[in-house]
Length: 509
Image (tube, rainbow, N blue to C red):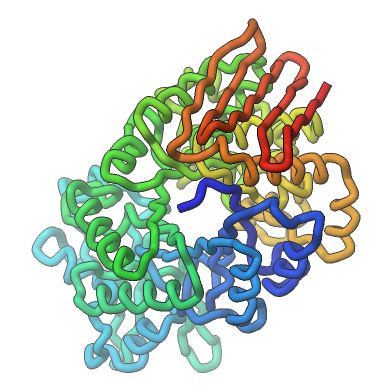
């Protein structure tokens, strides 16, 4: 996997289709800024959760065509695509076959029949589902109130409960009584058909030209009575290793996605098992360093990655929120709370996880807004990201200095909090933003990062303080050097790098 910068966007984020994004990246202003592109899963046939409820991994022809992928690869871009391991949409062919054929469906056990799973471990309720004995579920991690069940009506009229960790909706036609569903149904990893399906998905992603596959929600896939059912060990790692062997045959690199507090050490386990990790600590650490004019925790984390050989994808913003509770164990709790209060005070939103804000790991906000829409802070944050360990992932809205979109949240209703940072930009808006200095300067830094041979997973990186509020980062590799000197008290910085065509110098006074 190359170490160059990676664009991150939905297929309709920049102009309306993936072809529009390809045309944008072909522009002279954008050429050389990226070496990879993470296309979010609404590029597939999906129905909910902005792509994360997959009906099938066929391309959504309203947004893209196979030729668009070829066009992106012709620009020298590696492609990163999603594989949602834990669930499929109710609208998927597999689940629709169950609704049509009931017990006769070949996919009857492709998803998790709740009553079969809990048989002998609880009491049947009047509602037709088993209520597990408390000793089996007291340690379970649920993402919503109550039991994670969707009651499904079979053709013979029976109500059968299926495991449903995430979203669900049930609609009944008042005239016909016919029921329809929306939701993300958990697949049964004990079914051979599920593993056959996994093989088919990886084949399809490889056919699109993917180099990197992000594994979404893989930590929920293992379910065992009496266990937490999130990151069960060793079963989760067994599933992951089996997927890795399948991916390796197709020359696909895996990037497992997991949110967990620093103190739990999950990132370390992933790295020790040979996987790249997501650096969910960096977004909060950079805000902490800039707002508190103190790089202590940032330096500590960078040195740990260097010394432990951790390879990661790092980021500022993303399609989700800004993770802050991930910092628990690295940054003091009161300082984390201060960051949460600061970002909320600047218009960010917190979604409770069944009434408990301390159970939710992120604040939803545009990164530019989280920094108070201060262009100097935003540019310093980008420079620091590009000089930190890892492969930099660039959220499109951060690049174009997008702000909190409260109106999008209002339009989306109760579940629309994440839309605050997902504004689609029209072609005219993109053209206007490309003329803004904050955008042009970020692009200059990105092009430097990709062209400088001093950066790399095998490079030597040194980071440390150079004054009370200052830090210095130096990269060396193949006889080349890149250095960043930054003053957190003023947001002034200087970036210098040896490039094939000469020395690059960038200053923010």
